Amino acid sequence: MIPIDRFLEARETIRPWIEQTPVTYDPHLNLFFKWENSQVTGSFKARGALNKVLHLPREKQTAGLITASAGNHGQGLAYAGTLCQAPVEIFVSEDASPLKIRRMQEYGARLRLVSGGYAAAEQAALDYARQSSGTWVSAYNDEWVIAGQGTLFLEILEDIPQANSFTWVVPVGGGGLISGIGACLHQLSSARRLIGVQAANSPFFYDLYHHGTQSNTQDLPTLADGLAGAIEESSITISLVRTLVDDIVTVTENELIHAMQYAWKNFGEPVEPAGAAGLAACLSGKIQNRPAVVIISGGNIAHEQLQNLISMSGV
Image (cartoon, rainbow, N blue to C red):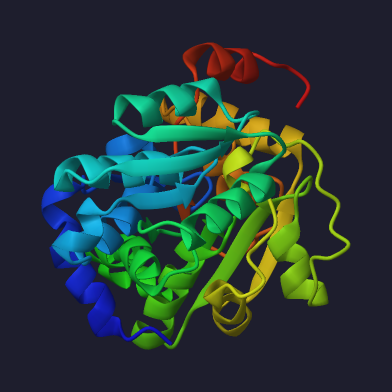
């Protein structure tokens, strides 16, 4: 278990460089939304990347930072690299969002495009990092990254002190965010319920949680690119999620689109599919417990794609 002091220290470390994103209450659904789509770089990922990089010795920073990303973690790491004047190399699937690729480059990162999905990019990045003098910065398999992600929980408590007794609904990809929130909940609340949400088309963590293996997981294309792909077999998030999370559910592509439509039409918030996963689970009736905090984890989506998806009917 990552001690609560690590999260408190991370909160102070990254506070000057991030936004305190808003929380909105929806009385119709009895849900509180945490809008991390308005975070710097457009997602919560900046929290973990900053906490990791700001704790590295200066010589480690200047030797370079290496990662794999579907786009959001890469932007967070590139942002941290810019603040610390550290070179950043990011391995990215050639099928990644063009918007996210462009934004990583705009932050000054050097990109290496890899054929195949996220898992192929991550393996290529790990192989390269083993032969490099640079520091590998996982999107999830790192205590400093997890501590940075968990600052989101502490920030919400500053706005809603009673929220530690609510149900928490969190999108799950590699498990860094839900591990950080879960560790804080475990240490600060006895009345807690934590639910993870993953895309049904790429349910790697769902299978790990419910079946103990991801070896037979079917990986289909999903709009929720930030939640897709296999998990490092040695990832610390696997045991943390099994210990701290009450359940993981999945949502369909249509349910993701419906949630994006709801966020836009009711709050004017642009949310990418992965960021809408928690809301999708609530709207589809898969999570009944209320009140609940729903983490809207990101909003990095091209305007044209957003408009096309929110204008769709019959979902």
